[in-house]
Length: 400
Image (cartoon, rainbow, N blue to C red):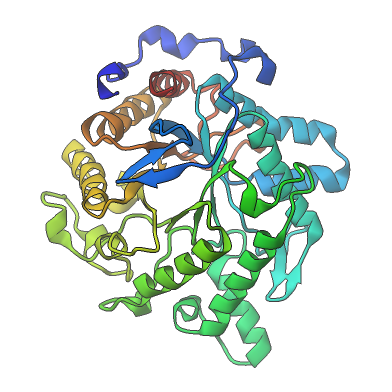
């Protein structure tokens, strides 16, 4: 299929003037194929139920659960429609994969969970709607189940729950050493595995809209440095996911950090591959419990300074996974740059994923609807950032 990809050109100047505001939401664009059957892994390739290889680009739209929960609680149909705008844009850009948070461990009124044993139906219904809205548009989902970071609670929230129970301080890294904290993670998996979506009527364990579950988003563990504790934690939790969701693909959700710098020759900065944060992509690749391996790409944050860094980072992750028959995918990528420059960089990055490496999935961070603005410096609003929208739509169309 690589020969059919024709996007490795700079967007024309007129791309910045595409009138995407003229798109009629949802029904006005050519629909994505309806979701039919689960995605499987065969010899390092993602395939549909008809054994057709899956290759797709898409976006992180992590906030869907929270905003749909707000809309339901407030009876705000305009907010729900405003949130759904970004899913309509995914359809119009031919982007059939999205990554959304499957957790919300915060004290916010949209939370799914506010304590180790305190789950909230209102928050779960927000997740239900997010899955339903994606499903009826033909968008498959990659869903992490906890955050490394404090946003939406994450591992710092787990540490806070343990602190309240014990009356002594606990920290983020305790998740990797204390079985009780990991039991709380498993309790949430048990809840989801037994849940029937209130919008679709389909049990989560039987929902093909979910392409893959991720153990967590961007796990790091400083105390794990020099050992395999983080890798063993992923093994344990991935095995639990496999038994809870036997028809779904299982992924780690990591940034692709490693502890083997020799596997990434020529990087301008060895920080992401010297093992400082306990992560090891090359060791995760050997785990039988994982189908898919995630890597992220933020060159400015990782201290990379050249186009060669991009090539090495993407092609080496894809190659390492393939050695073990696993599927590597670009789960997040972002750059802080003007629209035209960002479009050029995304085009080059997706070229490394799909043309040079034969990768299956490349997701950017992040596409926004109007109601979500402003957000962060990496965000793309396609009705404004038209050069980036053009590049994404060209890749989306080429991969269909």
